[in-house]
Every structure is written in structure tokens, then in C-alpha cells.
Image (tube, rainbow, N blue to C red):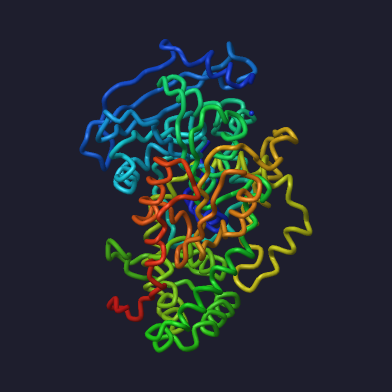
Length: 490
């Protein structure tokens, strides 16, 4: 059964408004044998160099090792200098719902300093990529211009579920880590280092609890601690947006161009709330006339997504100001960036968040998070629609205990992050006995992939001492700057 295109587009917009444990070692040893492993030379998009692509057969249910099997897809990006024989770095993708192998081209460039002496291992988490994907429909052309978040419905959730096969209760964070450690064992690495970004930090913390003996060091970039449920982004988004307004006011050219930015923002929201926009515009890429529908929630969702990156944030004042003048062409340009989908396997997103996070969220927590001056309860809508209908599994109570593994750990937070603020990093820093928490100023979500931070990470991976690092380059990160004109002036 397929979901119609308007529904898929509404799902895209809605998800964007919210965006991830001795016996177990035996399990890995059972499945990490040559008959279950396939490894061959290959090429991946964005990488000219030959790399390795692998498949590993694992149990869908680790309590039934002789039962149904699934294939875990992974790639190995080799070290430039293999002679040093350093343990590899495994990348744990975000979401939940990102496929790590699809990110290979960007990671190959971003982690170039690390790759000089150690390989990168990218594993498609079960439920993503080519590891039994949980996606409603692939390669669909989405009409992101004419849809609004409110079009995502309970029927869409039911239709989505109807496309899946397998036991959804097995597509959870703990089994994902069993898969990752099975890949480690199959590749004959006694120990590895891991880097987790966003939800990948949650996965990394689970890895630290389940298989501490497998890990030499850990990098947690933009932490989603086990103690903080994923999905409550109202307060953190409002904090991030308020910092954007304050930084614009402090920056002379931004203040001069947009002296009334906060009031213009509120004006646009009030106008769209009363009279949603429905016009015809030239398609931002094709030039053909295209219907554009914008309501309050769609405008907020789009602005929210820009808060994730410094580049996106630089456009926000211009978008708001032009919208206040009735010009939504710049907004349409931002919308065009989401054409072709989110590169997220939303079935896994719902499967994990609805079962591992939302059950810990109380009505009082939702009300408190909704009490903000930015997007209200918008970040909760997708979960409130999908989770009551989603098949249930529940982790053990131990899953929610703080992680206390004594492994060298570098924790990185972006000062401006809209979803994993620095306060999140403090949860893990307080319970991990061998950790350091770096808060990167003028940085947003997953700032660890920036050039300066990569150098700090590389030094940490070599020294394995989070408290003996040269962090001087972090002081040179420039203040936020903003686009002040349609011709690109900053």
C-alpha cells in the first residue's frame, strides 16, 4: 500500500518540525563468522578512492539466534596511512533514521584529518539504508510547496505501517548496538573508537553500557542523553531562536537592516495564522509556475530547520523580513532545499521515539515544553499523531539509567543548538567519570564536524585524554553574521 504524495510531503514537513548491555558479547561472537560476512572493494558517491562495502547477516531477534536473519549494510573508508594500525573510528548516525553509508561522501571530507591514520566504519543502523529499511516509500517526488504539516494524519500512519515487514519490536537502539559490535567483531577489531552525532550520541551511550570492553574512546557530539526524552524541542528551539534575535541585534549590519525583527516575526505569524498564504510562484529551480501554500506551522517548521546550522541561521532574518513585506520568494527558496525528501527513514524514527522516548513524557512535560515564545507545541504534533497507533515494545528499566562507563569521552555541544542544547551534554558529563564537555560558541547542531573541532577530536583519539587537548582554535570561531540583502550582502 502506498501513501499519496501530499501525505508524504506533509510527513516530511511534520518530521522536520521535531528533528537520533556479558551475554551480548556472546551474541556478537556467534554471528561474527566468515559465512555471515561479505566484504568487497567498491566505490561510493562523493569518493573517488576505492573503499570497502560489506554485508553482515545477523539475527533479527538476538534472543533467537537461529531464527529470522537480516542483513546489516556497512562501509569501510580506509586510512591513508595504514602502517600505524590505529583502531578505526565508527560513525554512529543521527535521527534516529539516518543511514550512515549514504553520508560517506561528506564524512570522507569532514574527517580527513582522522582518516590520515585510522579507518572510518559506517554502519547503516537496522531500519535504515540497506539494513532492512523502514521507509514508507522511496524516491518519491514530494510536493513540498503546496503541503502543510496538518495534512499528516492517522491514516497516513496506518498506511505507512502496512508497508513494513519483520518484527518492529526488534528495531530498537539496543539491537542496533549489538549489530554495530557484531560488525566490529567480524572485521577483527579488538577495540574501536566511536563518534556519535545527535541521536548517534544516544546510540553511543548505549554502546558504552553494553560493550564497554569494545571501546577505546568515545566522542559524543550534540548529546541526546538517555535521561532526556527525544522530541521535546519547544523550549530548546525557543532558546536558540532568542539567541539568534539577540545576535542580530548585537551585529551592526543586521541591526541596521532589520531593526524590528522580533516584531516582524510576530506579525508574519499572526498574518499567516489568520490568513494562510496560497499563491502561484516561479518554481525556484525550474521557473515554471508552482502553487505555494504557507501557513503558520509551515513557516515555523521551516525557520526551525534553519536553526540547525550556522549557514541556515544566517538566512533567517532576511526570510522573516521579506515575508513581513509580503515577499515569500526567499521562503520558497528554502522550501526548495527540502525537495526530494529528508534522507531519513521515518519508520525507524517513529519506531524508536514512540517506544523509547515518548512513554517517558508526561502531560506536564508536554505543557511545560509547549510554553514557549517560538513554536509552541509544534514539535510534539508528529508524535501525538503517530505514537498512539504505533506497535509497542518497551526497553527494560535499566535502559534509562545514566551511563557511567569509565571510557575516555569527549563531549561537544553547540552553544546555539535548537534541539540538543549544552545542558544536555552536562547530563552525560556528570555521570561519565573520564569525560570533558566542550561548549563551542557561535556553533549550532553537531559542530564536531567543523575543521577546528575535527582537529581537537583527532588529538583526543590519539591521546585518549579528554583533559589534555589544544582547544585554542575554538576561541577563533567568528560571531554569527547574517545576510542583509537579497543580493547576498552580509
